[in-house]
Length: 155
Image (cartoon, rainbow, N blue to C red; front, top):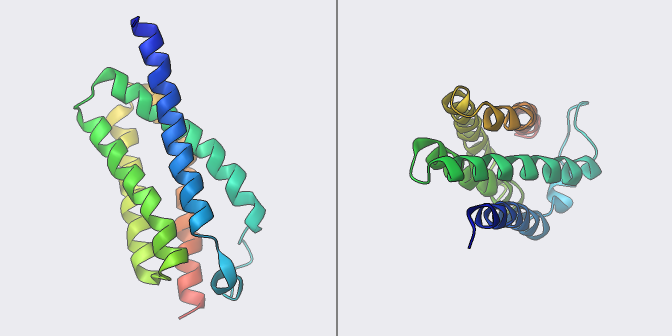
């Protein structure tokens, strides 16, 4: 198989897995009544915002993951990418499924650090991957503030 075809198929696989797992987790861990009944801060976005935001972010995350995979399949950048993906996918079941309030805050805090680490690690060698993670860092920063606010408002 030619290298460019293999690379293109790898990109499609990255996008399919990241989006597919993200969608599956979203469908199997809906906000539900528990979340609907929480007191929310004034900056809490409407529920419909989350699916399109995460769809775009997951595509950017997948492209960045594919880029580091193509560059170095055993390197620290890919290990950080895998770690942030695992933390990302763990948050919704912890928050919406288990109602694990402070545990969810811990997950999102470590997620934020792994995203920042990924950006820092890639900023020189793969600036595009680092830039692809910038909107993700912004969104998770907002989500972390929202998460802490929800926990504080609903002891």
